[in-house]
Image (cartoon, rainbow, N blue to C red; front, top):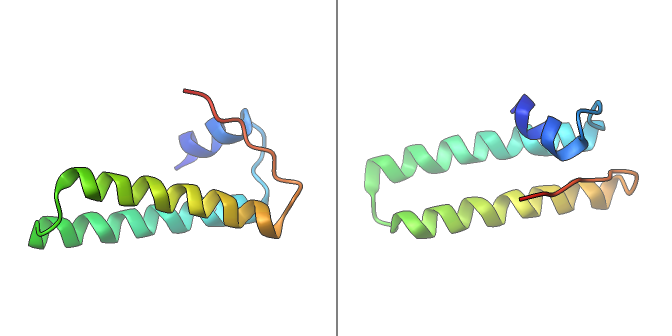
Length: 75
């Protein structure tokens, strides 16, 4: 988690809304993966797509409640 926050903030201290959103996404990711390992009723690629979409939604939600959040997204 710390590495993700460091990449998103250029190693700056993350704002509370961003930190909370990313921690929440990691919890969501853990739960989704545990569900998938039990059921495997969703193709792996769809699980990946779901997790990526939820990550984007978490970032947008953090920015919505704190417009001062500036993210650096690089490939």
